[in-house]
Each structure stands twice: as structure tokens, then as C-alpha cells.
Length: 176
Image (cartoon, rainbow, N blue to C red; front, side, top):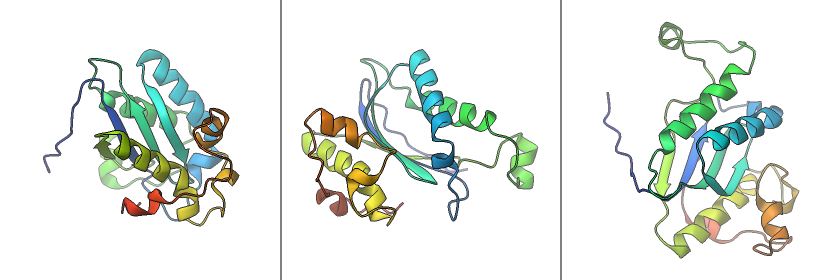
């Protein structure tokens, strides 16, 4: 089994990519967006974290999350979000023998991508990437047209303009 090295920074801010197991033609996350939002609120009430940026696409999501001072445990937060979301869905997915033997659902990829935000420029680049992602994937032509992100709240706060179109998002080079 691979030995994954996670970057544990107390009170750190992280960029995450979390994928569904089956990505092609799967709209599970947007189809059940209210459930996902409810689960995130529930987990956040028990294990505090601040969401700087968030976007939910049909089959994956990106998040810029800040942990409380002294806290390094983002893994528990993601584990609970994945488990609670999965448990609330009817069991309709096909399971591999390995997942069935482990009592797992066939909804999420086991792992996720995390990156520690290093500085203000890194934060801005990842926030831009989060909000530009639906355009990158051809789901919309204008960032403002995607309803499942923090973009509109950040427009209201004066951080982005409603006609913002991206730019730095393409330079990060993440394939998702």
C-alpha cells in the first residue's frame, strides 16, 4: 500500500480536490446539492472550519478550507463529509468485490488531493481556480452562471466582480 504523505499545518489553509469514483456522465453531486450542503453544515458544526472558496461540479468538487488555530485534522472532516453524504443516498451503485468486502460504498474515490496554501498569491490563484473550474470543464461560459460555488457570495463581498472571467486559473496546471 502506498505511503501517502500529508502536509499537516496547524490552523493551515488548504486547497482540496475530491472526486466521485465514477466520473464520466455522473451528476450525483449537483443532483444532490442540497444534501451535500446539509452534510457540510453538519460536519462544520461539529468540527469547525472556514470555507474561503468552494465549487461543486457534477462529479467532483474543489474547496479552499482553513482549519482552526492549532488544528491539523482535515482528514476527519473529509471522512465525515464523504460518509454522511454516502449514507444518506439510496444504495444504487455497483460495488467492486473489494469495496463490498470492506463494507464501502462505490461513491467516492478513496483519496483526495490536498495542497497547503503558502502565501497570498497562492491563495488568490487557488481561489480563482476554484471559481473558474466550471468554465474550464465547459459547463458554462461565464463564471457567474454557475450556481454551485462561493463566487456569488464573494461578488457580494466585493472580492470578485460579477463579470470576472478567470485568468490565473489556467496557470495552475491541475488536471481534474
